[in-house]
Image (cartoon, rainbow, N blue to C red):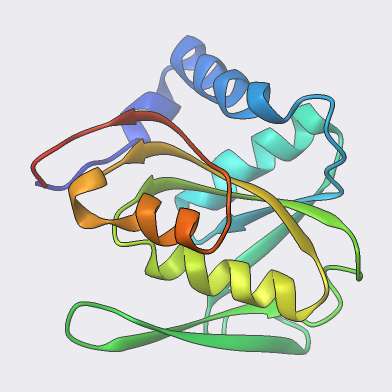
Length: 157
């Protein structure tokens, strides 16, 4: 079953509540950037960055960024994909919160984390609206030593 948050984002009160709940665990922590994974992570991440008064950094599919970028390949179920981030988006030592709508296998998020760390950033945490725990993404990210926060989960996916 495909899980989608666009109806949540279309509801003003629901969207505001989701953003507030994504921000809450990280309020008061030193976060210099919010990195959002393409594409719904841009919408959520931009709103979270606004609430935290930080910069926003997009992590996009290969070939979509306008300036020099670094790339990271990751494995999908039957193929590979590549995500990129501008090579000057994060400075060494900066704290970064990674945001996306959904955590499934964790492949895209793990690739995003590796990009941030390659630039010297420190991943403060990973925040998602939905976690699909049976697909192992949370365990994968926590196995990388990361803090994972999700607003809800759906078992049996």
